[in-house]
Image 1 (tube, one colour):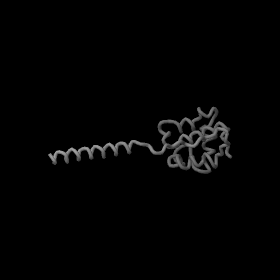
Image 2 (image 1 turned 135 degrees about the horizontal axis):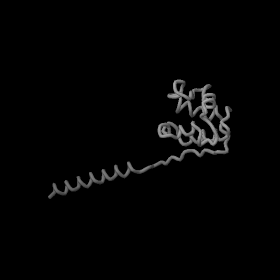
Image 3 (image 1 turned 120 degrees about the vertical axis):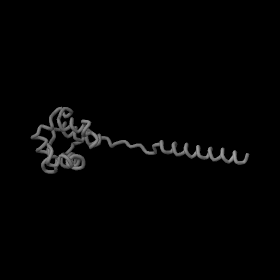
Length: 125
């Protein structure tokens, strides 16, 4: 009888531990909200857009694949290659950044910055 009680106790302890592990692993303690991107902010190519290319794009588009998005060459490559046009949502740059092959390379915030920069005239500022 004592062995049976111990066996039941062991099973209950194991079930409680499994339930605790499952419960704690499924809880999300923190939620992440990406920073809001204000469309009225003036977006600058050198300080806002080129860093996006540097961190996400130049590994492939650093001179061997068009457009060349490396520092000092990216603006001319985008303008002369017809990658930016209005409306911004239809431009080759924005469409490519949102395509299934590229969407994982940048954040929604980055894509919105590029969209608003193009909408504001895609200036080399």
